[in-house]
Image 1 (cartoon, rainbow, N blue to C red):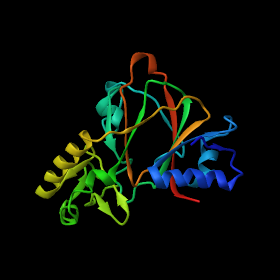
Image 2 (image 1 turned 180 degrees about the horizontal axis):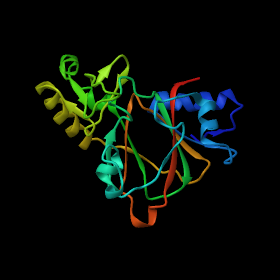
Image 3 (image 1 turned 90 degrees about the horizontal axis):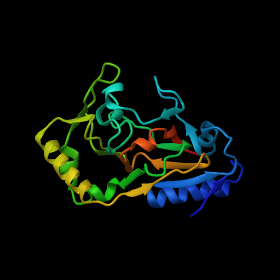
Image 4 (image 1 turned 180 degrees about the vertical axis):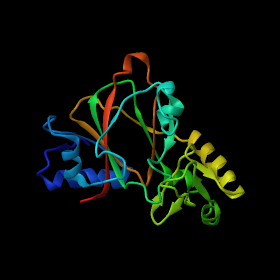
Length: 227
């Protein structure tokens, strides 16, 4: 469905979230490409104020050697990014996030997988007993986390470490299920195009960045909630 937003029509915003409810994401366009990404985000929900993180983050392809290892670019460079939840190591990751095209690269795709089918064959006892922790402390604290809790589904094979044997076995099964799943592939092709993702449900990744696509720029804004 082609959805065009101008920030005034509640019916258009409703259509976006109807798609999010059905598919876990929605690709939409704005009628006026000059509006800021924060303004677009504020049409749809409550913009998150996260400690140490700017409201708008510029996402550009980076070489691994030039980037901090606490980021995906620092671990994978221009290669494929594995499927994950943004800020899965936080007690409560942001509910949604918006990606907005600034400089397009048609051959670089955002990859999306619904996490619910990935884990639907795994029994609730296993999910409850499998414990994970952040690879590094967050504000001096290390929390013990579960993959599923209170409507939140999270996953990150890089920044979440297994605490017990149940978690180690669960990780193997989840990674195998991810390999056997077919993701949606989304390309943002103009500054009018945006993508909103349910970060509590969908896993996302990125395809490889080739030389001709190193100028790709996206902006990202996190949302605490929808309106």
